[in-house]
Length: 245
Image 1 (cartoon, rainbow, N blue to C red):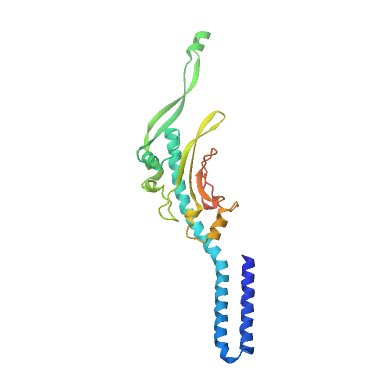
Image 2 (cartoon, rainbow, N blue to C red):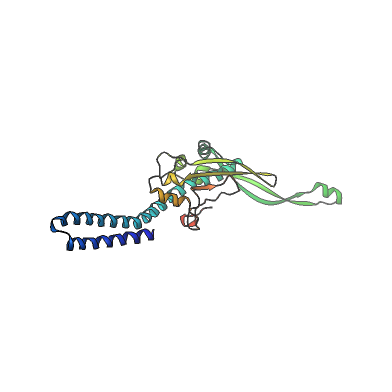
């Protein structure tokens, strides 16, 4: 970009020099037309130089604003999924099912307390009363998932919709299991392509954003939370956008 700016500035300076040469050497009758053409050229190059600087700045401001909105939705999806796993033991791969779950499911409120009971085997073996420690879990009550996660908001009902970018787009949602150490572990992934979020922006800048590799940026061509390839419920955005875990 810096090279382009320097080239544009050089061309502007050359054009201004040509204007002066025209004024000095070109016959009077041709001067008005040539000067108009040259000043139009200067204005065009000046505008392009400004855009080459301002364009990426504007793009980054808009990108950050849109990413922040998308991340809010991804966090809602993750919260709902973690609640689903806590209650059912697995994640959901369907938004309709996930919304119905939030609408109807309840968390069980429990309390753990230590206690002891007579160990019949040891008591019989030693001829005296022997005791063993146990943990008792008491159920204290229930609380609706939607009240716990979303309080008075019903935004979970539209959490499948990408809130910015191309109209009508929805997040991709997958869920399943992967095997680790002969144990099946529930996983999920929700994502949206950057092309969808930034569909109306300069294609060269969007292409650069899709290829970004940076600790301060969102690496890859999508914003996502979770993974279908590893046990991971984190988001792929840096913490400058907010908590990603």
